Image: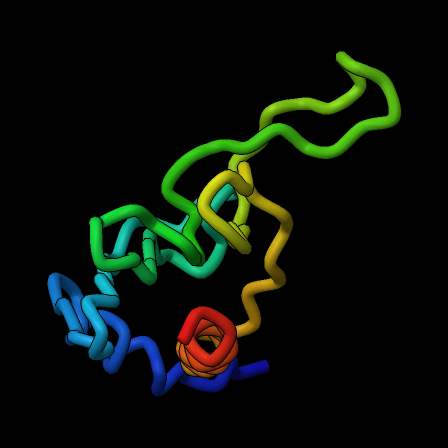
Length: 121
């Protein structure tokens, strides 16, 4: 069985290091680089896509660059595990994000950027 190529991966990798002005002082930063596929990163890409407010504070982010505590019912029930996740606001520690492919990641991120910017403007 042949796996289809993730054509969005090239786009995501080409965007590495990019910063995009979103007017009103808001800006986007994209970091993405290939790594060896592993259990923690089965898609073989390390990434961080963030939206920042005018003073530099991150107000939205999609990443797999660090481990986060999995939600649990009791104080110590959650385990710290690396996985794809998103930060929905400045103080959000992260919630799971299902990575399907790089193109869907870009679409989901920019859709959420549009939503957040429409709420803050």
